[in-house]
Length: 218
Image (cartoon, rainbow, N blue to C red; front, side, top):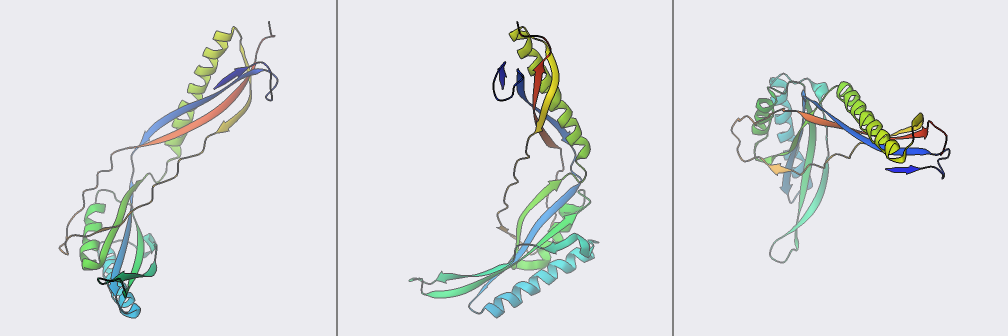
């Protein structure tokens, strides 16, 4: 936050950064699911991982999840060294799915059934709660950020004994990057429901605004 009468942003004025936030209720759950199989033969590892993934897909269909809500996720194979001296090799095959569930209230039951259907090969990368239409919350957060910037600028102008003039320019801040999920193994092959509490998410906004002075320099 700076206040100046001269410099690269001439004519003189005040430049401030304002921040704001607004709460929104998530209504979509995104599940990162994968099957992971280890075997000395890559063909066997891929076959068994594919079979487990097919069981997961079928469980999702049975629960009423449309095919268009399921897409291929991170998929890869690699080798691991095993044995006391690390000379034995085995292949790891991981096949991923990203599932979008538009009913947060039943998402835990659906994901639990899918994980159980996949058996010991299934992995859960995480559940992400998403606001499907964040525009309203973003607008409220942006308004709060603007109000914050205006109050700071007004205070600085008063301290400097000056009056605010017109807005010279506005720059909006960038959103923060998301977290990368890590995979955990499902503990049971029995059907179960995962706890999913939607709660609220906070949407943040930031703006940097420059006002010119509205009066003549003393």
